[in-house]
Image (cartoon, rainbow, N blue to C red; front, side, top):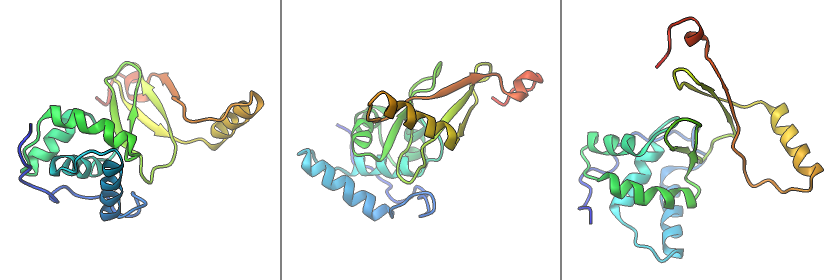
Length: 169
């Protein structure tokens, strides 16, 4: 079992403009979630939660481990792998499966729905939201009597820099 984390609260936290709830409320909500699941509240889990909330954009397990260690904490990749499904189930983060890449995550709290443009050459990912597309999804679901619970939408192409021979990555 992983030892106690040495550094808490060192990770920069999102401002209320990026996250709809203050960190203290998110922590309390997560603690309540753990209690309902009859799981222990641990400092390691809360540190991983804080590190995830400190990230912007897509991230992977290694990114969180690095962030925590850079802040003076001590956490293993195994601890992060075990904690992430709990954070997903609690609605704090969501899985982002970008075609051709490893599974990554992103903060779900306070985020608007978005889709992805993916460069098949360099792997660059651009997040976008297009209301007409979202409306079309709702209309299709209604027409076929579906209640949408989620979707995975990607547009794959070649970004401008790659077409010009100067990839971003």
